[in-house]
Length: 505
Image 1 (tube, helix red, strand yellow):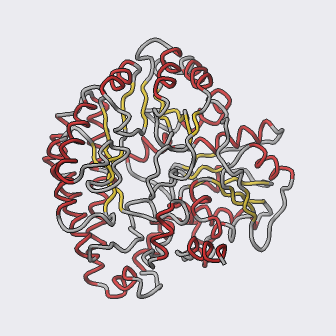
Image 2 (cartoon, one colour):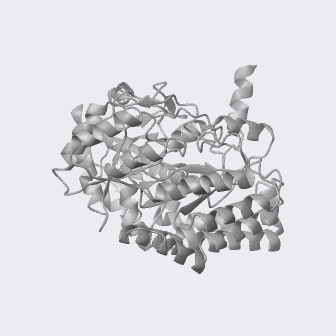
Image 3 (cartoon, one colour):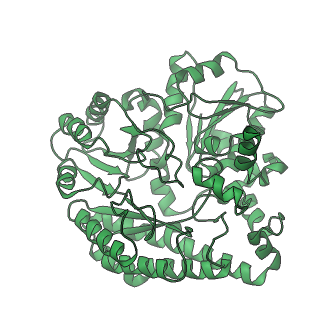
């Protein structure tokens, strides 16, 4: 079982400290199921600091690979390598759901929603699928995932790679009750998991850590708020844990914030997304512009009085954005909410992950950027509706510079509570997430101005991938570049549209 947290070798301090804490839950669950079925299992969480060729055993029968789209090319190379050695390969994770048809070209099995019977089917029919892999999907998320104690054999070695902060991944629910059209979870029905299991898992962790750090991987934590709080409160004394969760502003009312504080919630990641659209999760569906900035800012400042760390998430380049105002409003928010860390994402369509992606493909606006760059910030694969590319990157560079200027970093530092919050804000700002992205955006902007072929690729006038991108992929994959199938550098960016048109005939 290979969980690809990184898409290539990593060298930053942030990656060294945090990548092991980004391990996914489902690979651990599947590894546990396979072992319970009587199989010998080796698992590695690739953080960018391991040599995969040395870490994994030889003479493998079956290789499961889990990855987000940004690590898909490394996954494809690994699959090709192990298929050449006679192993059957299986892809799961977000990329498998977003680009199943492409993935089937390089894997024997591609998994959508996966339950134990799906895994049992593969274990009982471990045979190569040629020339095209087989897509298996359970139709919905499983009702039960292995608990922390069951997965501990696979969790513990991964967390030992984290030198300081060790964060255990957990789930309290799957799916989301909201229907944000750009989100992969918008079509997944909300489903709470067993609250007794949450309690048991937390009690188990108290036998391993004095005060455990736990990250809930729920798309939207706290929908069943009282049940979640009761499970946590019954597991240990107040402030026995440090929790991190992604939630919605509409859920985070002052009485609930007080409960979160009492139960040890350290960090919350609410989505603001846009100043003009997508207001249901932020509780601002009927307001926009400056009024929304003021309301959301006041709300986030209230959260910061209860919770030490808050990251606010924004999507840049939405169709509702036009001109300077969206970016100026974001700057205004940064000024009014100095303690919050701003997380910026470039609008990205991940295959058939979300309903809105079909609309973008039908409009002919989706560009075939290699998967390696589809991580919400290295490439925006949708032609903006209301901006020229150079103008758009000028504005992205401007707001990113503003958010991670020395002045903004200092204000964020002084308005943060505690050493951990201050350290995280500072490290994220000066690492690849802040200054690193700013440097990359400036390179893209320069290429757009100086290289006609580069600009044509962005305009959709050519499919010739600029060397700027292929060189990065080759460098990141290193020795695995030789195993990457040549066809994997390109994909059908309109596969979702084409499949839908075929189905409707």
